[in-house]
Amino acid sequence: MRVIFILLCTLGMAIPAYALELQGEPVQGGLMFGQVPPGTEVRLDLQQVIVSDDGRFVIGFGRDETGSRSLSVHYPADNRTEVRTLQVMPREYDIEHVDGLPPRTVTPDPEAAERIREERHLVANAKARRARQADYAAGFEWPDHGRISGVYGSQRILNGEPRSPHYGVDVAAPTGTLVMAPAPGTITLAHPDLYFSGGTIILDHGHGLSSSFLHLSEILVEVGQQVKTGDPIARIGMTGRATGPHLDWRMSWLNRRVDPQLLVGPMPQP
Image (cartoon, rainbow, N blue to C red; front, side, top):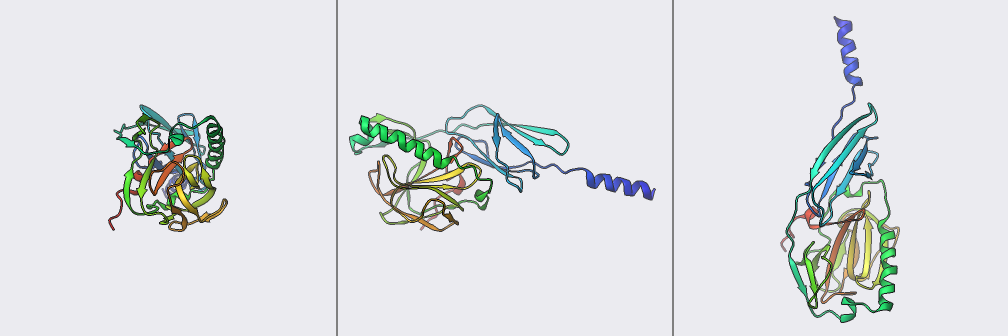
């Protein structure tokens, strides 16, 4: 009996333990954070998902995503695959009217349109970094405090003309107010004057998840610099297409625009 007991214990220790852990909800504009055993392969539909050496991963859902998504988790140890169906929950979005913008920023002339195309490539390249380090795992904080003057997903009417939705959360604050890093990461763009967004920073948090900070009056970091949560990175301004000083904080996972406010909750009271 003792031999059988030892054999059973040995077999038990050899059996790998599988545990797919998910945090967050599959909601439009939302993120879900996962944990799997190291070496596991993860896909969201056909998209391969980056998994860090310690088994962390993140997935996201765009503003207008609907229906179900298939999360496939493959465990190479025994060639087993687990599939979970994620039903994306819809949201309702506000309609936001923004008046008083310079006409050239609402309907750019041909010369400006070419500049905008070039800048979009610049921004896309800055967001293309796919670091395996999961800096986002440290969690997120508000990059500054103030009145929320614009929210994610709202349909924007600019000078009376319907335009693309707003993909960030706007925080109104005086020009010169410090902007802090909401989470650790690496600076991939630090540009003083993009056409629409003016002074702009992009901060990579790993695994294709990045933050963008728009309309800045001063940039305090440079490309390649690593920052920690709470490090000063810029000052608030009203550069680019803006009618008053504020921070426009946006986040993307790969090519999906996600809602920063879902990560940080209500604005702290002064």
